[in-house]
Image 1 (cartoon, one colour):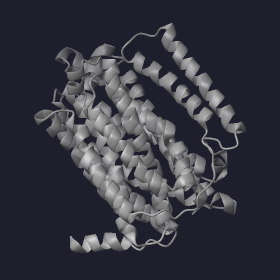
Image 2 (cartoon, rainbow, N blue to C red):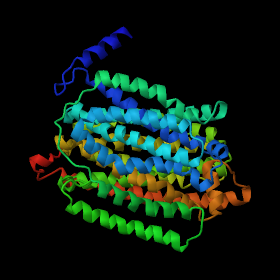
Image 3 (cartoon, rainbow, N blue to C red):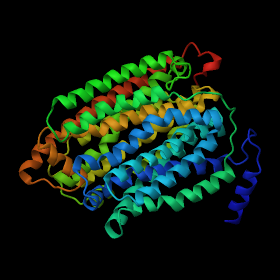
Image 4 (cartoon, rainbow, N blue to C red):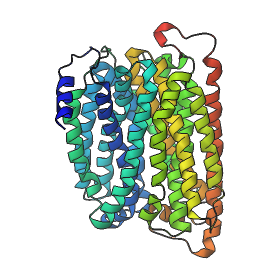
Length: 497
């Protein structure tokens, strides 16, 4: 313990801009930040039934406790990444902890559904500051040939956080109160801020940039329109209002693209898309999230609705997968450092395709160990993909744009995540009542034997839809193989490794 304190102290004496004396200690601080945000993604899933009952929230409203958090991270990630380039990535990373602590404290004290959803949005801003700048802090800390391994350990933080979220969520909701899922963030966040202040220093050059407010507003409303329409369709029939939100959102996305082409400091830095392999890497991240994020929800619906397990028992079956994924991440990242990112990333996506096909075969009496094994297989694929793809993106990014590139990666991945849930529920609920399907997901309803078979067919369709999306991600990933041979990108835009 004393040696660790001395290490923190010596790291603190380093000068900003100088080589980091203890990069692994700095990496551990970044991993803690990712861990906390991952905890808050999975821990809330198990608390939804209690939150609904305590605050008297409707089924279609309670889901915004999850979606609102992800949507805010999606909208502000590039902007807070830009703030990191402007004012210091470490400073913005530490500010993220402060905002996250305040948001968690407010969520724990929420008195109704509006208060809880608004405070979750605040928490999302803090999560965006942490996740968008964490990738840039790693890129500042480690040379190109070591970043894959570093991002692999970052994957351990995410998987460990997801496991802790499942376990702590079940224990807290069962034996204490759902409010404690937010209270626990406060002491952890305070400790993380203290250590980060002693260990991390800004090393990158500051860049004078402007925030793209119009771009952020049009993107936010453009994404909200289709998302709101899809969530409504999971519980209500199609009507003119739903069509209006969907079409209006698409129109605003077109306006957003036009704004980005004309503004001097766009939210989406179009120069980054000129870098070879950057576009397919970002799109692969988006399609992988669109296919993979729904898996957790679909499996919970199957285990709770069809197999009639309690939320905590259903979630504990998935814990081994998170553990395996965390172990695989650093090895895949190190392989990407030595041999390139295309092979491990594409193989990882292919493995996830196999897992999705296996999920699509689940029946009324499938042994539960098959679910555990399939989830472990999928986690191996994710553990191969994430560190390799992240390293590929940050390796080709120019150093002065690490912050906005990291935020851009988070934006693309989160666009997939926020739509993944709504798309999965929409497809899975085609075979039974939409309200019944929604209640199954939230954990407030189990299926009778007569409707379980029909709902299982709906889940199969959702898994096959995810399979097609994952295949698209794999094709995008393998297309980078050609980009890694031949011409190199202009020096100012980064080079392909």
